Length: 113
Length: 406
Image (cartoon, rainbow over the protein chains, first blue to last red):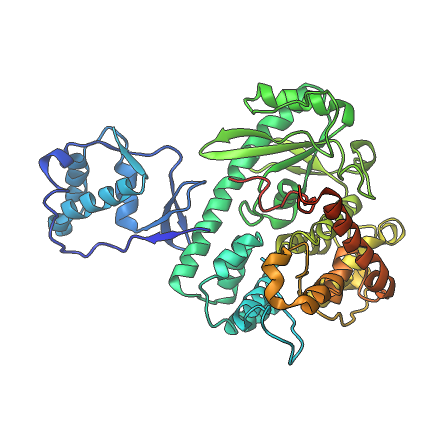
């Protein structure tokens, strides 16, 4: 049986959770957990492990964050890069990134280096 | 997951599957094939329209090995199930696609190693069919990799797997077990890859037997995905015969038949309808035509295949109605049905199931199988239980659902 977990796109102006985006969180270095993969299917982006039951649905922003998680960049670096690329959404990016990473960590899809 | 699909009007409903389960099973039957032509789209749309509750449809599809095909055909027909179901099917499709890639990568390591060691080998079942008839990685879920080698090479092949990092136990007494060596396993990219080295297509004691020498007459070769390595499998006629044997053997009193095996037979026969020597099939492998006639009654075969086989369509009663008696379910589990119903389900199963299990065509008389052969089969099983009572239950073969847990 496969359980599907739906990560709905984050609301555009949600307030940043103070604990997630703490200075300590921004210093963490996320990396994809072993054997997790992100793939596009039917125009949707899915994050999965070949033998785990959970499938994480993501969106384009999630795909960008995933690509930037290499174990070298800090969460802060990722936020800065995305804010530079999308200045119009800069205000929401930090909380989006932190919430997304925290959810992925809860599902075991990323690890802190 | 046994489903009672065709209850007679007015028959008691206490063991019947719900209308919704019947509708879901019928949808899966229409999806048990590869090509997505307008006719299949029409039938899929029609069958999907009868489903009121989609909650368990993806789980049922997965149990039958059809989740990727269901996803494919629903999309082709433009049917959008509720989002959680669609996402579940997407997830299953992706997982099978990735798992198949991992299996094929392992195969691309194993076959060259066998070639170097001078071990001729044929790839069997899922791994070969996925390449030959399903076309894209992931449409045909694979539980494991089955490879046929010569009897004398089987221990060497198993040792070869051990050198590739598989846990590949050899028999302690040096004797060859059943039809294949102990399952060899290795963890690859997050998945446990299981490999079975067969020295015969069938179990010892099974009425049919075929070793590499006779199976490799005219092998069918294909290139492994994303590699330059060419693998070979059974020739057209032997492959089709093996798939039909596999289907009838597994549609047993113990376990239900999975629809992916139906899809395998229909897809292979349809894909190679022109290349298959149907005269040879008629002469040497009549079981194939019997099975195809049953599958045609279940879901019309492609026109080209019907033309080649010259099968005459006939009505078969109880299509899709699985065996529901003892020993599939224990007597304790069935006691609420009442003894008369238990006896009827056990000794008088649906004509469709009887024909499938005993490999009879849609036009054969059922007289002997209904009144003598099947009751004797049940009585033999009961005698085996009584002989060992109270120590053991029915000598149940391994379930295809349980033998290779992931």
